[in-house]
Image 1 (cartoon, rainbow, N blue to C red):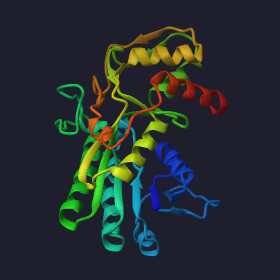
Image 2: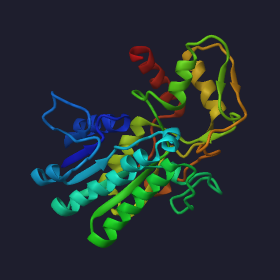
Image 3: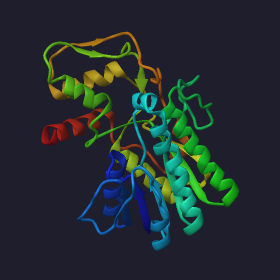
Image 4: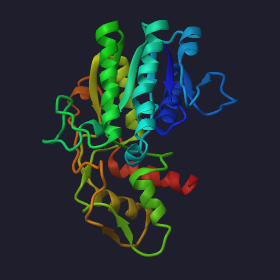
Length: 298
């Protein structure tokens, strides 16, 4: 199968491209970064990304969109940029597919941020969407754009709502922040109370889940939760990480949250389980793998 990975230089995109080439797909990458050594790579303009040339010269059976901004605080500071990367870019992709490659399946990587603070846990795909940030809204818009192209142009598209991703190569968010703070003297200070919770999913399970959706998903504009289905508090996650890092300092919580941060997340993953996906990497194992990468690379 010939597939295209958009955002192939990012955290999830890098792992996704490597995975699909490893299982012998004819996988092409695409991003804004210059790449001289990969014949199956397209570079697009960061300020005015057009995909017409790509889909005119190549016919793909599937396109997986791993591109976009992934910072809630930055979406407050630069909402227009976040909109361009997370919403407008999806429209540009689907418009190019509509005009030049309408048989191409499209998987859009969305986010649990579309839920905001769920009224009930675990949160399912049918739960209301109440985003708490521009980032969450723009991911929600991207899902609506997929539905638009399905409804009016009969394209094949779906969205995968990824929860709290982590793993080797990730240089931001909770565990990277904990690692950087462990290098300084004194106690570690974190936002919140520590009782906030997330549904962490290791990167290897994410790419497996994307593969399952590609092979068995229904491309009618629907959404799939991609998570472990296990709720872990930030306090538990932080202590697990520092045990593995053998850091002896003390963690203090500031007791105040940040704008855009939800309180509790736990995903209902029955829909993607029905396709045959089951997470394989436990949270402690994932943390150990991430720490191993930190020691070797960071």
